[in-house]
Image (cartoon, rainbow, N blue to C red; front, top):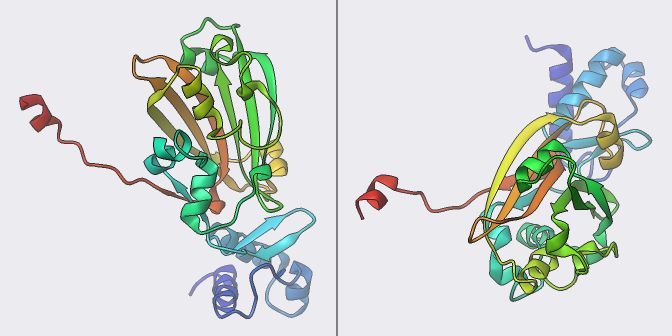
Length: 262
């Protein structure tokens, strides 16, 4: 026999999939289901948490438990950085994700603050700088409509970005093509990247900023961006609401043995 909370979660999931609870509609308050005999407060709470983990609903303080409006955003891997998008066009990375997901976007859905700060040990190591060096931090909050999706803070050496649009805090990308185009115009053409992903529970501050329920998971991204000669021109740390993204990577499979022979 399945646990009571699992049975309730399955019943509610079927109702959501059948359209009885429409996207954007709030599920009944926990106390209402308790009074209706669906289980104890802990049972209903566990069922709602299961629905949230399965990506069917979102929960936040003051908004209750709401049926997810849409499928998770596609978070492109390699394709989101295609030079044709930002060098020759105006499709910065978060917009590339929206286009691939068939979703609308507004440039003002990205806001940022820019400040000159002391590099943390992590940032200093990524840039190969002594601890305590100054860097520029460009911290962005990206939303889809009114709902935040992720944060991304990029760290730059002052000599690479001083006087450029990257240090302009105006909402939206840093001009046509965004930050990568600014670096390109300054003579720092990006060539390759390294991305590392870490799954963890959101901190209280992150949960509040991203409108997550307590204990919800996030995916932390570390992105290091290099020029062809190996110069690091950006180190970025992103925090993504795990349930709001589907990550996709499409790449050619390497054959190092054959390459070594050639």
